[in-house]
Image (cartoon, rainbow, N blue to C red; front, side):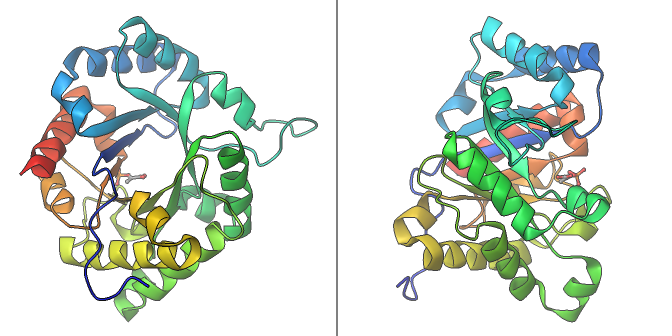
Length: 270
Ligand code: PEP
């Protein structure tokens, strides 16, 4: 049992800062952005944070080439994957295709996919299982809409999403990151209050502990996402159960993204 003592953040204390470029940037623009970020990346980030660039599928090779050429500690990740290994699934991208392009992380269950494409918790769990089988870390997105938030039902909603999106998934190979992203904060400029985000992050970690045991729960990284900017990231990183950020809009500008990583690393060291 977890007892009353607050859990520390993940065991090794490393942050995970991931930039989700969504359906932005052509191949050429993505390579240029990756190069700008690589040029500005600071050595000292590497001792504190894993920093992941998540471009569209079409730019994965170009971004991973920039990272490899620069011998950078930056990592590359994908925005989604198929739960299937191969075959007649037109338009889908398998986990093997992603690992062949050096993807170490993959977002699953982003609210845009849940909302626009009807992805269910069961769909997300199948994708997370496929990633785990290949040792890729899923970044599982969960979060409530405004109506749930206004009713004060966020924790129950999010905890149920965690249970459903990881139902039956063994997380011992790839590890796990769970991104708490209130839907009303995504791309809106609104941010969750850090104490609200901490309460939800703590509930996520407790749920992971009841599913996988304390050790795995302490290894998990719980992220906040939703209008993260250079000026607000430190307040989230200061929360004991928040181990990083999933950044959308602000990851499309090298200066903003690099300031977010620098400010997050400074907050983690403080
Ligand atoms: C996201 O889409 O995951 C996200 C957090 O976007 P933004 O930072 O733009 O709110």
